[in-house]
Image (cartoon, rainbow, N blue to C red; front, side, top):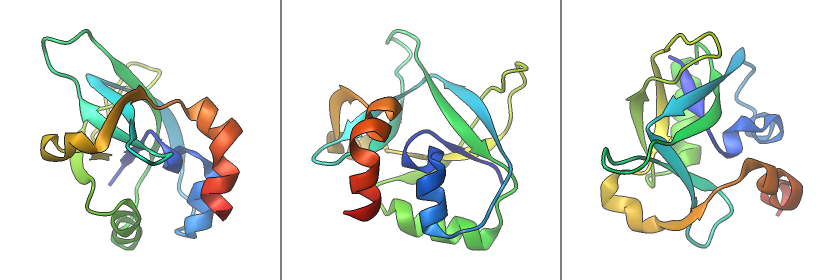
Length: 133
């Protein structure tokens, strides 16, 4: 199974800290989704964009061919805030690839702020604290 990541899991430092193994990865874009900050947290949540809203897309990373043991560890890391659902990100070549991603379901949308989550800001200001407290 392939996993599209858009937040903390895009960072090798976070992935390595989880000690879940090495997997090939490729950059990709996920259309019709947006990423916002989780309330009172430094990590993000991914949500589907409503059809009537302006088009949006999320830049991220796809980890390829994850095994069930790794998925179990990731499910535990991501908690019950997220649901792992099927998505279809697009590679730079234009090819869509079947993946799953951790998404905030509509019933838990109140957990998000209206502020977009910025990976560059996270890396510059919060990554070290996120990793080491």
